[in-house]
Image 1 (cartoon, helix red, strand yellow):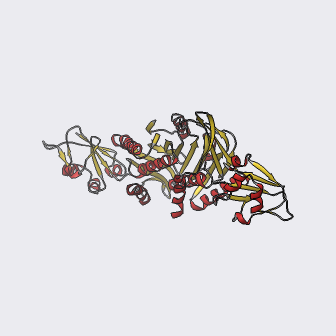
Image 2: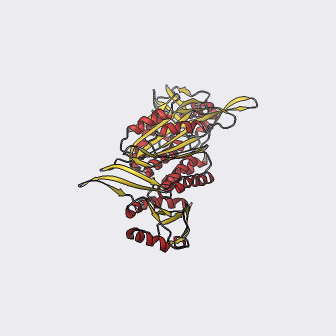
Image 3: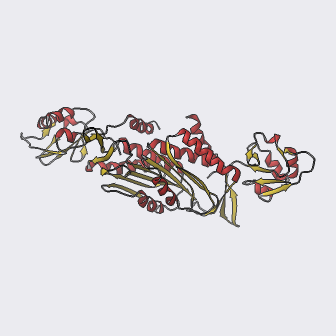
Length: 153
Length: 153
Length: 83
Length: 83
């Protein structure tokens, strides 16, 4: 069971996770990560841009690597693009496996790669003294550090 | 938000996870692991025994350590006891945090400790040539290895 | 009377998940007294250093130093086998 | 006509998410030709080695060796900033 999607509208993670879990009978464990737009002070909205010819194929390539590296029964990888407000889900990754270590590590691996090696660009609309303004988010050093963990293994 | 439970009857993980997520507004991410009774060949049922004076206090002690070690907003830790059949959930751990690394690592830490340092005893009913019989499960070397990872950090 | 709770496979060795032991002497029950009161196979298994003991729900640091009185509950806890 | 798609903050530097460049010479558009056709601030930024280039949805290994013809789509891709 492999379900990879880019969505341009609000989604409800449990509406995807429950059928995904049902679709992998016999599993030992399911690990899921849901990322939401955080309520950082002053942040009014977040916009994720993508480049269609690269972004979805890149997510499929990532899924191929995940299935090659971990012993999985299923992988759900859903990412929002477009305009979002705090509290809205941005990303949902769920991995079903016979053993918990594969499920947890597969989700961890996907998230690290989606955060710093997938074709998304993010900007935030922040309240300021002269009204709200959009600011592009630069890649964070922590994200590159997280990604590098997998190369040493 | 801290919700630690021992349950002696079937539960539906999403019925716990959705309200838990709602109860932690402003979060950046939620990581969840759900373990189910695996459909191993010949396994008909699984029984988890606990010792009430130690088991639930032990889960609360584990939660204290998790909140001390990771920057969390909330932790849900639910464990079944009693008789279960393949496909039924045994354990559900969900961690809400501002940053994904804390959420994922907290779930990983909880699962490793629930698997090899919590007061549960497991036996399986397996089909055999002379009918079904119960077999006690011994701790696995892999589980101790997983637990030891946290001591080096 | 002392209640002895047997967890995991120890319940099989004891023939039941709970046993009751009568205090015989005037003092508390010690480790040797407990073993003498248990079925032989269970008493032998109880020597395994991985088997922990709790009295009234509190783990005993050194089971050889066990002391239990009338009305107490002793639990014999084999290695756990996880969730 | 060549379509130039600007991702992330490059869209701000270019003044729009998409620009169109006319082929002037008889041969394909190369890296120097592309930069000459872009707004100055964007052309300068495009030199950043972290900025990748794709032609018709395929990443170019070495953007200096870029070659694009009539009807092609060039994308300028700054460092990603995650999901």
